Image (cartoon, rainbow, N blue to C red; front, side, top):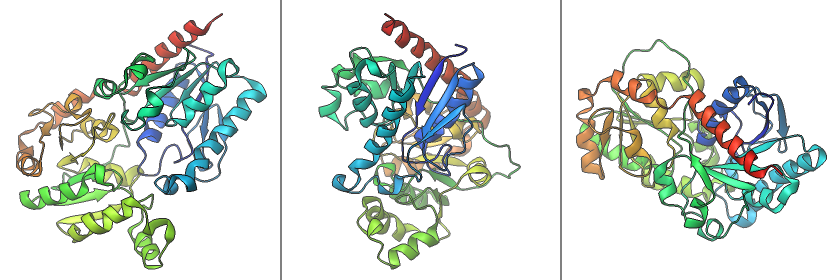
Length: 379
């Protein structure tokens, strides 16, 4: 669709590409270059430090707001709305986009839907568990102007009927190929995710100890990716951290299991450092306690020939071929047993399976959905 003008709204939480953790922002960073390669003119709505090339940028907030995201609602509710206010002003100022591709949970479609026909047709990608906001999703009506795309069939199955009726299709996530690095195979398991109870880092640590497999935890705690910085700020009584639920989970459930040898936390990783710790891993662990809808980390691992051991929740059963590209187990005993069998898995089978989730393919699917949305909204 050469000449199509697309406003991609990545939201105010992290830069694009993210410096370490950032699943949604990784998806956006993967999609935008492919849309431009296909001939679309892309404006990226993001935060100040973003470095992803685009035809234009709309930067409403100077700094990423992720460290505030889990704070009480009455302290952070204005962040997403401030970001959207900047987008509304840009839309009213010029109206130069054909379609908006939104990635901002709830606030994006609600604000754009309230603009009616003064905003371009909008497609929102649903990156989250669709049971999180039942009051919104069971009642929201986009009137054909605001529609949705799911990232997996399992995600859509959990959605209210009202939302399913407004969803144009399912577009599986793809991940960037990453930088080629020369690294020797290691013996560690890896959890590549922010430290939070839903991601199950404590479960991973106990399973790895039982299996005798060293574990590396890579990801931030409450937006803090530097272990030394986290310890310093906690020692100083930083109020932004001390009450954060992810910090409580870290202190109570994970840090007691981290000994620097059998279980290590290396903080947030990005770029070459991330590639090295991922490509050298014997297995990626995804011991989720929630029905993750997209799991870009799983796609990244498989594309690099790294098998995956995880819980059979959400999208994982459609990404991991049990016994071929990984193992799925429902509890700690099963995860520990699966870790002992990873030597049975062929790295090439993992790479072969990941070829179905390419960035170019993801972009083509979205371009098709844009066209359907625009066709439905033509006078």
